[in-house]
Length: 149
Image 1 (spheres, one colour):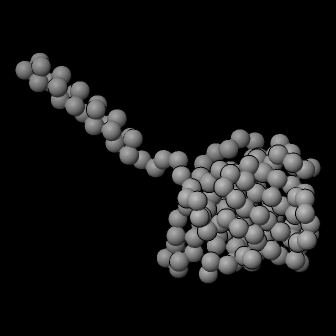
Image 2 (image 1 turned 180 degrees about the vertical axis):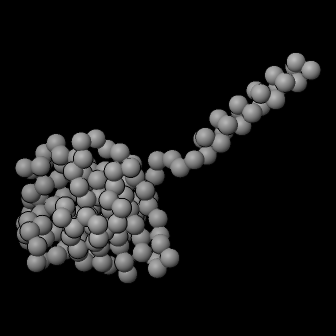
Image 3 (image 1 turned 90 degrees about the vertical axis):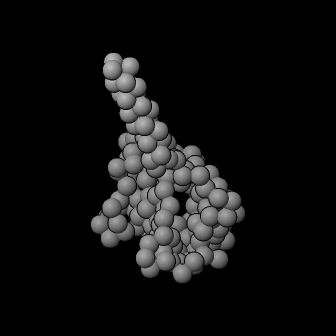
C-alpha cells in the first residue's frame, strides 16, 4: 500500500513537471517574419525603420544612410487576430543614439501586410506583464504608423 501511494505521488509530480513544460515558451522568429523589412512614414520625426532578425535601425530621414538610433530586438510573442492582423510584442534595447541603454517594450500591429502601427514605452526591466494593453491606451508614449516599402 505504501509503495502504491509513493508511486501515485511521484506520478503526479512528474505529470505536473511535464505540464509546466508545455506552457508558452520563448517565441522563435522565422527568417521571413512579416515585421521584417523597411517601413516609411515621411511625415514624422523617425521617417524610416529597418527591421531585421535581432534588431531595428531608426532613421530620421528616408534618404539617410546612417541610422540615428539602433536597437537589439527580441520578439516575445506573435499572433493573428480574427481580422487577420498580425501582432508582435518585442523587447528592445537601444544600443546607438541618445537613447542608448534605454529598454523599451513595444506592441506592433501589421494590417494588410503593408501597414504597421506601434506603441511602446520605456521600462526599467523587461517584463511580459509590462506591455501596452492595446494601441489606443498608450498614445502619450511612443506611438507611430508606417507603410512597408
